[in-house]
Image 1 (cartoon, rainbow, N blue to C red):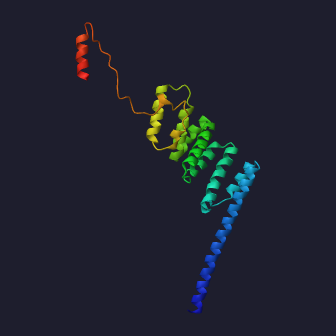
Image 2: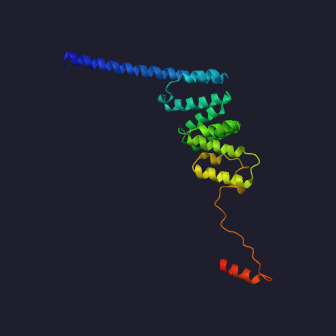
Image 3: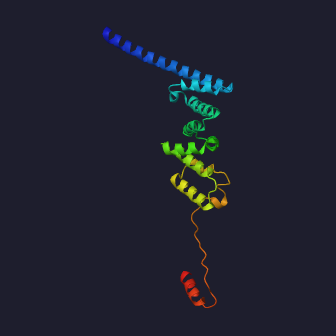
Length: 215
């Protein structure tokens, strides 16, 4: 191996080591920022926590557990600062990390709790603006839940329409009993109808003929 060739290899190795060293240093810095944010939240200083979290440039480059902690902390911080929509968006991201059914259900309950805190005007605005189908489903469902003075039939129709549009969405398990009880369940249309016919008197003949035709 020539001296020139060896020098080229060493230079390339130096660049690789330098790159990895920088990446490791960056990761340690971001983990430190995450820890500082956790401390700030523990001290009830959500704005400081948010500032520290905003300095994390590549959360998806961190270890998986740190990524989950990052989005959970961000969601909690926004909620503490009175920004439910921002918190909801972070919790929707968390859904893609969770695999345990209990943990997912708890996350959905927190999403629903945050949705209930949102102003109807903000809900309508975000429905028109969002490109996130998952978020759209949550927003449309809570909009139905917040409607006042809606007739039972209109409510059933709205819920059926929502379920048809988002058949696999977890929001269907969040409906409170007052909206999703036995007489409002999204069941198939009625399969039987009652037909009242005159079987006595002057119209008994036609009534029996119609009855016989249906039976």
